[in-house]
Length: 202
Image (cartoon, rainbow, N blue to C red; front, side, top):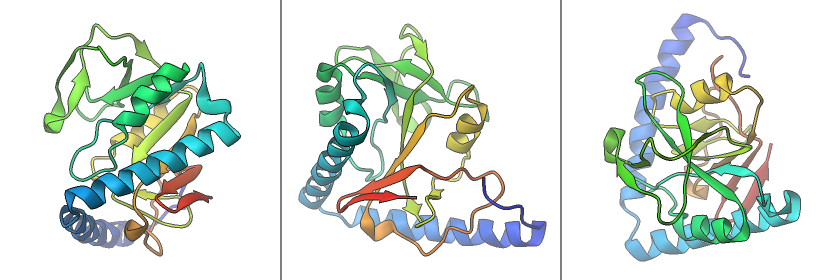
């Protein structure tokens, strides 16, 4: 967990994060379709290699991934590949406002619907599960493993509520690396961050 900070600093950090979040998301919008596809493929290859070298490919484990939005790395091809390998893929969704995310099992033929922020999510017919490994897309990240997300706090709130801590993997672009995100008390660091150039263990 991040160190405790005073309220004045917390307000300053919130203002800084909002500005930095906008800056990084605007930069993502400038990526061409081909560059985005290339970066996504590189990140997928790095992630798959890490899973096989260090985590037995995650076979049989529940691996929470995500449906990409707003220029995030698109790892949907890897989702299908891991599913065929025997990894149990889950997707998160917001089912109650300001509550922890809910994870449900995904298969290539699973029924999807539109959730918050128009993100495709699984219907409530899909089995609810608890992940062994979580994958979080990063707006920004720092060498200490802290992630800058969209500001809703859902991911940190979810990690804090899980009965046992999963392996936490963040994925993003090298260009989104920051010296620090000024971690706050509620922020939870990733165990490893994967970008197009490789794994950044923390």
